Length: 216
View (cartoon, helix red, strand yellow):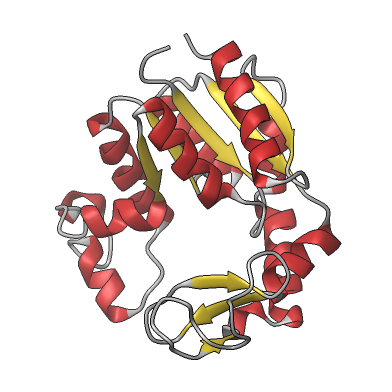
């Protein structure tokens, strides 16, 4: 199939980033995330949208939350420029899901399913190099020397939002806002639920089969 239009859904820690990169490489499509789309279009003129600022950059520099209407416009722009894509991190709520329906037709919707306790283990075990940003996991991908980055020798730290309390709060937010989005798409002909608790290679095998089946 050529240029499939793929949406990947799942909670924090489900492996969306890893599998999105696999999809982009395997099918030659663009990996679109909300953050990347914002950065790529930060100087987009939004003065006609009756918002506080005239560009997304001003929201970002002020540290303010970018309004949904602006995020929708930026995602729409990114999708319009992509010849096939894997969309990751959007939509985050039902309102955004309804907006997305007006932007594009999706071929495949992949939903990575992982239990809450597995997600907590994955996220609280993550360690990041405070020098070069390389990622590790105390169980699944530990460094050669505990607490030391293989790449640059920097110190490995646990990010503030990777402690157990923060992780559980993030998962609560996902359950409240984004879980209904998954339910919204379950009736779509291209919807496929993927067991995200398998090894990354096994998850990828299931994803590849789903895309090959549903994308033209």
